[in-house]
Image 1 (tube, one colour):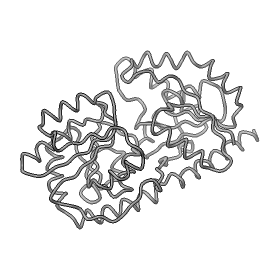
Image 2: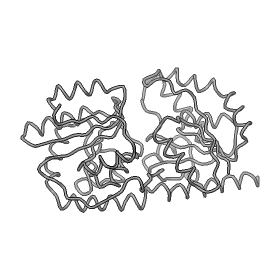
Image 3: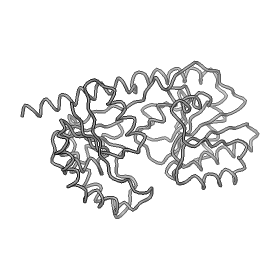
Image 4: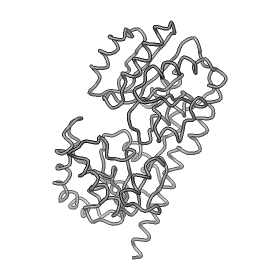
Amino acid sequence: MRIAFIGDLKSANTKSWLEGLKNQVDIEIHTWSLDTGTHGESNIKRMFRFLFCLRSLKKWLNKINPDLLIGYRTTSYGFLAALSGFRPFVIAVQGETDLWPYTLYTLPMKRWFKRYAVKKASMIHAWGANMVPSLLEHGAKEDQILVMPRGIDLDGFSFSERNFDNTVIKMIVTRSLFPEYHHETILKAMNILKKEGKKVELVIVGDGTFKEVIYKLVEECELTSEVTFMGSVSQNELSILLYQSDFYISTPETEGTSASLFEAMACGCIPIVSDLPANRFWIEHGENGGLIPFNNAEYLANFLGIFSQKKELLKKAALANRKQVEMKASRNRNMRIFVERYQNLVSTNRNI
């Protein structure tokens, strides 16, 4: 089966998905992408760049003659896939709605893009159940939607039972250094814990345009001795860093379905994350992790201070999280299901 995949090829999520597909038997992948521009580029400018590339996309599709087209994110490449006229095609939702950020000038256009794409799609990937309501609101039918995460390569994130050190609160952040991930909430919580006399350590993994701002915040919170910046790391290095940390912290304002969360859970690093629909599916507050109100450093500090002392509960939580990821978020398992559904679509299309 020859698959044409269009999406942001620089995205870690895209790379993981493509790698998973390429590992399946008898799958040939062809990729196409626009120049992604700069982070923070005007949404209107980006939308028009997508609209003016349709001719180039159609020419590419005619050249490779695929069996199936996949467009990643409904309001961009999914919309382009719908406009191309190629059938069958699949779209995947990246965020909870794919409409964020909600700006006055672009929201109506993005809503129209999404409605057009989901109505034309042969199948829609929703990485989590939290994405389904918005799809239905924009005209999708329930039998169009496959709810299942891409998952992660469990072989790359090994698990060993661990003993939690309740004398030091060891944390890690693996989200990109962009403002939407709100690293400042974590740093403020650390500052509170430190003033209470607790020992804290934080490893920050990743890079991004907000890096210098975060450096400055670390200095302002007097945490230069407690925070280590690792920059971008390999998957093997990330697995080691997650195992060496006790708590994975992530405090964005909105969330789709996070591969970073699965990676932490796979390694036994306990997730403390924003209280959002996407995270509630995986985390039961106070049992296998924590759900923190958005932008509430005081709540985060208080929860960490108490939860970090529950060694036996944390050990059970680490094991339960690993089992949960093995059952629901194994990339190898989920990709086989995706490919079976793709093959059915192609077969049905040929018989029409």
